[in-house]
Amino acid sequence: MKTSIGISDENRKSVAIELSKLLADEVVLYIKTRNAHWNVESSDFHAMHKFFEEQYEQLDEIMDNVAERIRSIGHYAPATLQSFLELTHLTEKSEEKNNSQGFIELLLADHESIIEFLRGNINRFANDFNDLGTSDFITGLMEDHEKMAWMLRAHL
Image (cartoon, rainbow, N blue to C red; front, side):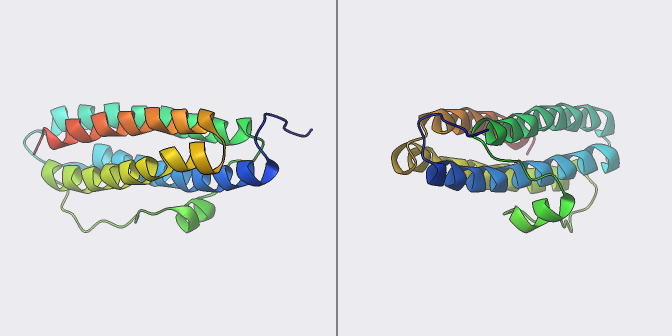
């Protein structure tokens, strides 16, 4: 069935493409945060194990919301590992040691990268694609990532 929400097909497609990139970034960051949760080794293991768990649970909700936003504007969300690796701005590889500081620095850099991507699309979605809903949606996501980044930064 045709999606008729006051945004042109071309604009909805453009927004869906950018949201798909965002979803890929969120999935890669989620996996990297899971890695930190599973593999952290340091004297603060228990606290960091729980902290990383809180972070990946937040990312799980964010991933679901991004995929549902793509669907709500009439497109399908990517859902394969291959597509995520092709779309992401992040790298899945890490040369960090398995200590909390190494994981925190790695994850913080990825959050900051996502924040910049989101900030760069807020006005673009509203002004260029006439999609105020998605603009508002990603503004909220940016604020979520800013808070998560702050929590990571506070451990450094």
